[in-house]
Length: 536
Ligand code: ADP
Ligand code: ADP
Ligand code: MG
Image (tube, rainbow, N blue to C red; front, side, top):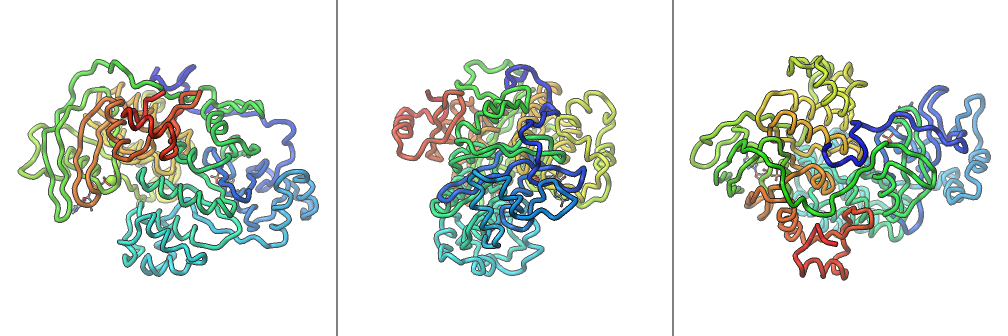
């Protein structure tokens, strides 16, 4: 096994979850045989409420209901459902009063949509133009400071990177004066500093207004939310939103794949973390040694200390945005030459860029068949198509895919090429938790099965922890100078990375790492011992 699954390695969630009997009446159903939603998340004054679950399970549908954009139909199509009938379904619950406000059209919601790439299409102007329109609380200066947007205020929205656009979108949402804030994923394209800054700002707003957030980076969700609703079911068929759970318990139940209160198992394996860094590394042969080198651009210089990549290993690459991770990948790939001339040793490289775009109307299957001759082989079907859940979208034109679908197709395309070294830049963007777990296994199996190297650049700490055998740490000053150090063992690498960040993690009873509150007893204790990740 790959060391992640406790029981077995089934590649994917179990596909049938029986509907609990007490949930027979849906909150909403799209058409007679359409997707059915059971339950709703509950926005609570003074709290940040998370929704934790896969894509296609009814999260956006819930938000449309809670924001008053859509009146739920309780699965009844013969007649129009009155608000009184809806209140009856929620009598005695915390949602009752909330829905009264919704029915009176008294709710103003501020929304951060999941996909932000439409923003430049819908708005033309500078960052300053956009943000000044949303500054209803007089909090804009604070938001701009904390999200480090000061230097891009006069940039055109059209020219922003994904990470810049994401921060602008978060600021625009939080700047509004609303009764209820909803943020559908904040972390794609943000580094861990930016993720924590955004999380802290959301917590500030949540002190006085209800905030509901969907987030798949569980370390961030854990520090951000007070309670979580788990969403489970069968994507595109039905979704059940559970009652609120404390954030620690909710995330642990989710990772376990079993909800004790509801008596529902939705995954037949548990996700576990290793409490100790592996003391002995797997015995592996050398694949490729990269030399000490540098790359100088007009305003940025990357230095690389040099190191060895091994056959069959997954290496994590961590560090802030703008520190040279993609530049490093390009040097290895030969897309860019280091100062002083090309690398002597050549390996073939397959690269999945950070930003994937879809400009082809070819179907997914047509595109993949053009890259690989092994499409029909059982290896390809079992190791690529199934775990990346591409079956249902093989006949979809690439330019009609959602962000998460496009990400999985881009990962498959990268793995379909023959290469010695695979470099996967931010694969977690727009993947839900289940898809991230599957990705871990896909990439580990790929490295082991092909005896190749796999380099994964990502900012989701849990993903990096689960996927990496060793890590390369980038530090320096973003946008000015960066240095690539390592590969290190997990313990040394995490300590170096997290000490630069000033963040420590404790372990809960299940072994899951949780970010310590800055200056808490554990935080100070672990920092004094130099144990940032594998303590306790
Ligand atoms: P999530 O936000 O969790 O990804 P959504 O609430 O957007 O999920 O959608 C849940 C399911 O409902 C989707 O898989 C889709 O099949 C269905 N759905 C969403 N909107 C509509 C609609 N307007 N008409 C019919 N079906 C819809
Ligand atoms: P990361 O992947 O860590 O976010 P990058 O390697 O993409 O960082 O970029 C590091 C720095 O190098 C950034 O400041 C970026 O603007 C700069 N840079 C990247 N490519 C070029 C280039 N072709 N010309 C000039 N500067 C570049
Ligand atoms: Mg990059």
